[in-house]
Image (cartoon, rainbow, N blue to C red; front, side, top):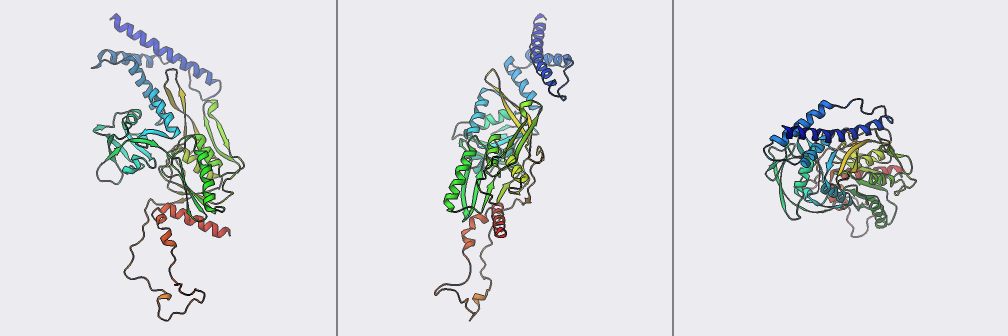
Length: 439
């Protein structure tokens, strides 16, 4: 009996010490904010319940469990109960997070969150095993190999999806519209994310694709725009910025990208309970496109930093937002290292667009909504439509050179690749229309 009481007293002492530290912080914050948590009394009964359960697990669980594991699991549960994005990161997970923001890490190339106990795909990353296997935004992963996801923490699931490059994993996926769960085999790889890609769609019209926001995305964007101008050999008449299936990333990178297209005004601001969570970011007087029209493509996989960019350019009337409603992650997570080499990822603020919109759980509504369809050319008919040029003894144009045939343009053939991407084709068409009107 003495052993049990000693365990209870020791556990209670530990928890009271921790809780007193927390309450001290709360009291300090109470002077700064009228909305601080009421700390007039310690919840001794709740602490007693916690330590009672702690003691029962140590004494009665079918297998021995270390104090370290129990306390780590308690911390994980405390954070995961707040929101889907707050979590406790042990030292290994903390290191993997830092690797992910620099653009190289191992695994499947998939951004995920938790929903009703399952892993929900926010977005597959470009040129990764997940994208090549056909993983889509909104997919629910219910099994990893033969192990059910239900009951796993997000950190445990992510850890299981990572592994040695070249090794395989089978994901069982539930997809809306599919009659039965899908089994997809993925081969793990070292994920090297190229944050920014660019090309000329056709003369005078450029295309920029940002797959994720990393620490160097702003500089990569500037280089890409410079290359587009050089390749085009003249001023661009329009640009498509593609943020589809971009799960977000570093806040400062989103600010840098927005700033590249704005000359002045607010880009984004954050508000939270603690003083340093309130920040405002303003544009510097330099538009790298010199005011050329822009269309920003978004979809349900565009989240977080992508929504910051889309919201800023939409509110500042700098770009037309086209596509589907975005994911709706409007919260800021702060990484707080702990003394044991681990870290806490804690939601500390919400971010707002320049007009004061919070997109948390709402998303960015596109200016022009597009259905999620694929555009394909019709098969060539056996009988072509009859035109004036096909009529016998038709009158000549009078301007055609000798040996030159009047008739169909080759533009459709040149742009065949764009027709396969319906939103991109619509964005390019809109830019051309704006250019014609501006003339």
